[in-house]
Image 1 (cartoon, rainbow over the protein chains, first blue to last red):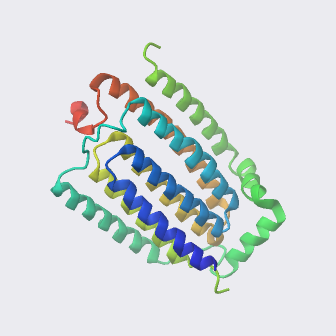
Image 2 (image 1 turned 180 degrees about the horizontal axis):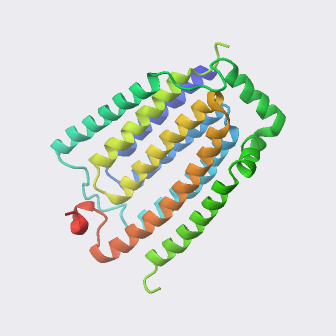
Length: 173
Length: 102
């Protein structure tokens, strides 16, 4: 059952990503990208990362894509349909880029990867951690202990990004 | 244990999504769609992190959290740059943004 759902959402995610790249209108592209994000959230849930699945919908589909749609509407890009897909030579180059990336990643992923928790015990250990610490705690406890410095750096990064976005987008600062 | 998603399948989906995003960055000229393709590539990397996290520790999911925060910051600053460029050029097509190319 889980495997069947995984393949369903995998095919949906890949096909809506393809549609996102090939649609002419930016609004249609954004909508297909939101579809990809929902399918990915379902896949995260199937993989046992429940909190990441919720965050994916809340932050990606809910906040980041709304920002994209607001900018598309603000710049009035939805209705001019000026074709922005490059010429046929560039289409061949794009396909070549995709194939090269897939080949490189397949080579990297098919190699002997380090698995500190082990190939068979890993999923059980993750389920045990989820049972002990809860869905949020399994992420929050390492984040607020081992990765405290990274968390503070992310906070500073977000502050800088907010100030930078206001400075860049405002007409007269 | 036949109902566990195979690791190679989720890593394969991650590779496919990353390749579609990379091809999209090459194929399109609209700056906003380029940003969306970059977001798709970030999501592919997130999927690889989540798929590997049962085998390499829960740190993978913590890193996904940080990647999402960085993606939010990147989207905010990038779209602000697009808005301020649009104000000068009246276009988001990157063929008009060649001032810094050479």
